Image (cartoon, rainbow, N blue to C red; front, side, top):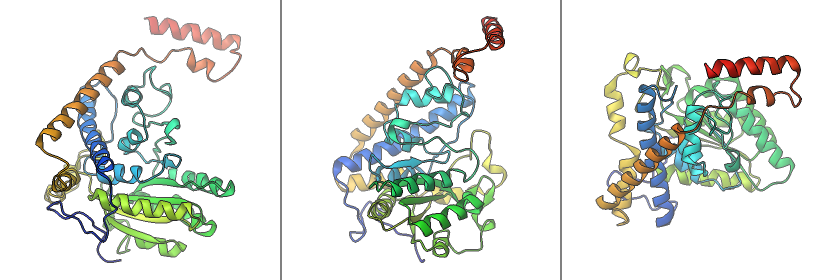
Length: 357
């Protein structure tokens, strides 16, 4: 498949033949979404180290792929995430406080603490729950897309997954079904080079992951995942094809996970940090900021103002989230049975007594 599609050059100039032509408003919205994800990741990892949240999966280095793909979809489209897409949830309108309440599993969490940590969901924004097992979200996305086709809806589904998921049966079954039935699904592989500690070279003998689409009769596209414009353009094109009845597309975005797989991981144990340094030199936020500056849409004052505004928003959201009470004990009983029987009422009373200390 050759070199991946690129739009942005290192100096901020663009390849006019591939430029998706974002307006200034949309370009700034994209940059803000990427910056929000970066700063949020830093802050949440810090909170996890302080014991104020239990677990976190950062996405540092992958912001262009995550936010660029999400913003390329229409509001009525569905997004099915893996476990590294807070930027996509926020792009879909999920309130920052609600997201952080989920991290803290308190009463402000719409899932009432039932989900695993860092496994958020935002139904109003057509954003499905984070998937913990590798690849299990892919069949779910294909099922949603199949329902859209049966209902003759002019919508599409975007499903995120990593390079590791392409080694699962779920991926291959989903790709085959999608190809046979022509469902309106955009398969977005965020190839960050590592499936936790396993490099992509140990997962497949294929030259690329995008070329796997050919076996299932799908088009495959390979893009520079550190280039927000390239990602946006590729996903927008794939989603348009899906909505027009031309079937699914596999998009492989070449990215890199700058930090750990999760707050429980130490990447220095299995990868050469010299490799990471090469990728950090292609930081997606810096590249996109060069683009904004080349367009004369951005400067140092705006950069400082944005960083402060995002930092203040996160500080306020954290303070409000930490002030929320725990999830009421009653819900562990009343959410299961409409009429709570006597024996469960006794257990509820005991649970309340334990919580009171």
